[in-house]
Length: 280
Image 1 (cartoon, one colour):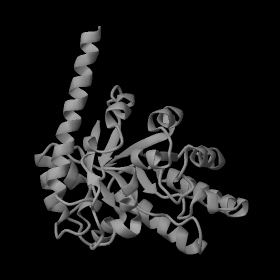
Image 2 (image 1 turned 180 degrees about the horizontal axis):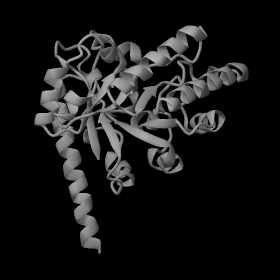
Image 3 (image 1 turned 180 degrees about the vertical axis):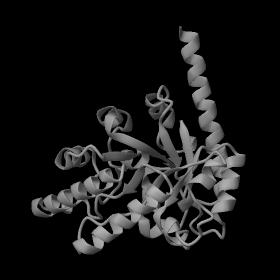
């Protein structure tokens, strides 16, 4: 598994990209998922680029932003072009976005058609730049349930459209992540890995709470300590060495938790490999 840290984990910390990259290299992470607002903030610091990261044995696994599917088309096109330029600058092939900011059940047929057409245009523009567009499985978007996500893939019908499979949010929707993963595995370009202590605490991941420095972090727990059974889910990706994933940690003690989860993942995959050998 190609494992990344997320710069969004450090959204409320006074820390530089150089510091994060040095730390990621020291602890043998493979890459960094770069938040769009951070990429924009780095535009006038040319000493940081893809080659600089490559010399450290790292890469930008994905540029994560929010490309508008509603509103002024000219402004949306400008935003799309800007993010795609940044993705090219950092030499990543993946741009993450949300499929709007409304629950799929609240979007009528006309609105949905307009949004999917906009998303198809975004995919076409990105494809011409050699990029994939990864829609995240996320509440209050057109990818908030398995049914709506499958419908979205069919409606957009573009080879550049992939999924950022957020396992917890799939589970949050009441679906079986293992079963849904089997349905869409050919469309998955990346994974977000995080967990929660109990289903009743899922609201802690709402954007307004996550982005607030004063937001609660209660219920956010290490990957293998939560209500979602990652032991079962990860069996479906264990035999795919090219899988790309990020530890999307939003809580306190960022570095400590990332290292803890990385070690647990390494032990998990080591045990899976050993079991496979013994079974032969």
